[in-house]
Image (cartoon, rainbow, N blue to C red; front, side, top):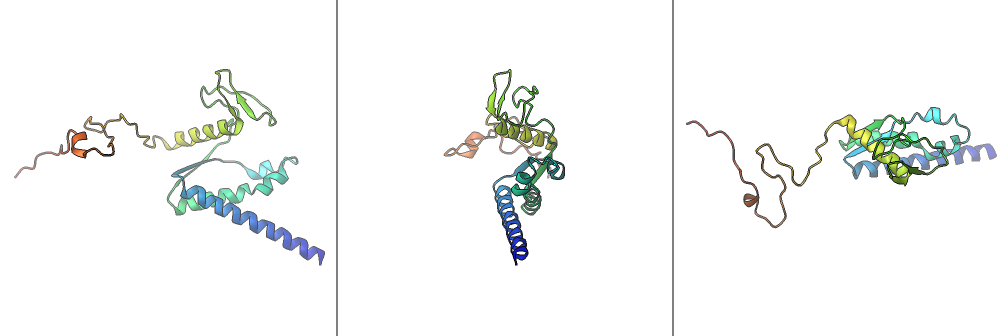
Length: 173
């Protein structure tokens, strides 16, 4: 009876973890156009006996599986970034600062100070965007192919803002 109860409790905790990862993965993919995440080898991380229970309880593998699935389902970009030095590199100047796992703040000689996880997430995003190339960050003063400003301001008439509406070749009759 006790063995059956333990097996049932283990199954229920797995089912809850799986359902949580599914809900969270769906929410992340539905609310973002591009999702960058570290390509962590969970099997290798679990070898560390100090962290293995926490890593397994967090359900990293299930979460990644659902991120990739919902990214495909919602036609979103999902990018697995190599985890090399994401927590050690400075997101501002790029200098590598060695630190222990217990050090939770990133302090760089360039003056940048931030929570270690925030700095790592900026590095992950930068690495992800570097792998996709230019993703079209629109600047307000950017120009289109004709040299006209591309920004449209609310309350303004479009024809007033765009100088060259039609630059097609004249049709030969």
